Amino acid sequence: MSLKSKSSAILSFLLATTLLCALPAWSADMPQAVRQALKRARIPEAAVGIYVKEVSSQQPVIAVNSNTALNPASVMKLVTTYAGLELLGPAYSWRTEIYALGKVEDGVLRGDLALKGYGDPHLNLENFWLLVRQIRQAGIKEITGDLLLDNSYYNVTMGDPGAFDGDRYKTYNIFPEALLVNYRTSALHLMPQVENNTVRIVADPASELLDLQNNLKLTRGNCGDWSNQLRVEVRERQNGNGRTTVILNGNYAMQCGHNTYYLSLHENPAYIHDLFKKLWRQQGGSFSGIVRNGVVPKGIVPLRVYHSPPLAQIIRGINKFSNNVAARQLYLALGDTTIPPNGHTSVSLAQSDQTIRHWLLTKRLNLPELILENGSGLSRTERISASQMGELLVAAFHSPVMPEFISSLPIAGVDGTMKSRFQGTLVAGKAHMKTGTLNEVSTIAGYLLDHKNRRNVVVFFVNHAQAANARSAMDALIRWVYERA
Image (cartoon, rainbow, N blue to C red; front, top):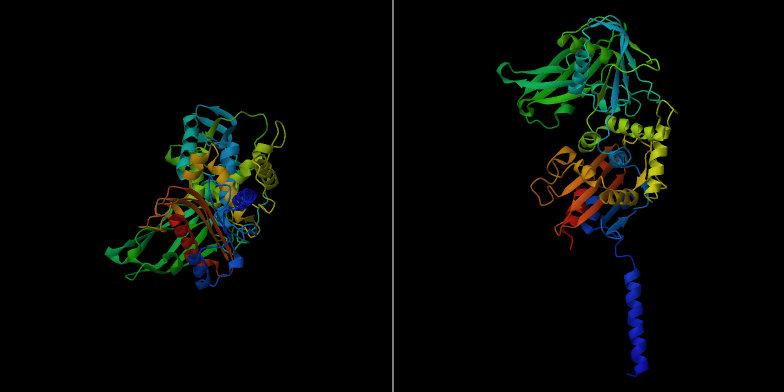
């Protein structure tokens, strides 16, 4: 071969090598095990969006329909919680202000007691007890007036709680309220009583507004899906006294042990009033007033201010257990960052949407298909593509708030909504992932540490009538990513 020919061959080799390196180092095709699982589930490949990428790589490992905007269900909480950590900070806390609308003399408040909320999503029974205790520690023993509740901080329209799926008493359908105590939830604890062959039911908190009719039969069969074996009927009184009757029928297996059934039965004022009276009296206080909605007059200094636990703690409940109400309250808190000094006095969903979109631009994340409604994923209209969710997760991994964010996600085989998945396998403990489920929607997204200790982002969306059957395909993808060369 001549020198000229050798030079030409070397140049061609170098050019080919350069072009090869410039090609995307990924396959748009999905693993065969995933394809077969989708086929068995009767889910067409066109109904899924998949995106897999190492967090330190420039190109994805797999991208299937990854630019198609799909409903992410509760996986949308990853957008809300990541934005919350970066914009508000892990130590952010919500406040609830306590006002004495009258003079306090010798432990007697001669006037109303007011509570003004700012959206605390974690004002549960224990924390509300602490708030009431702060009032007693302020030196008040008797309240001669009423309990005034100020929800004016939220500029949100309250709709029909049953509009989403017809289950108006389900706790996930509760609307956000600036002053929301214990998610307005009544927990019904079911406990088998073997000695007399019955099922004991205990309501928590105990309420003067609730009547229980227990017609449950204790059985000795397998537990199965115990909640679907219950027939729960709710009857509201029509005389306006706020009382509600809950009738429980059906079977409850002895093997089920202690379980809890949650309902939201009462309007916010009645719920808070009933609970406040009980806790106030337990702490030696005197109060016989009514409850009223209202607005605290401007210029009054709070008697006390109660602060929630930090955001880093609260998002663990949002992501690990998919708390829709808390996610919606956090989403609204993001709107607070758009309020200028001496500007608006309330927050709205539009402000929150504006905040997140501006934040995404500052992070150079282009999400043109993103549709936000309430930030929780409990929505028929919210949309994001698999690649957009994947790139958001990559950005989160390189963020200063990465430790708090990842630690809030369910761990495969360990806790949260992933506790029962991959138990006893090599994937257990290696995947931090958020799941999402709606009618005709099944999703999963998060991080997976594979067998070579490479951190991967994995996103799998399914929007199809057979989406409820998609779990085997999702698990097949996660196993494939874990085992890949």
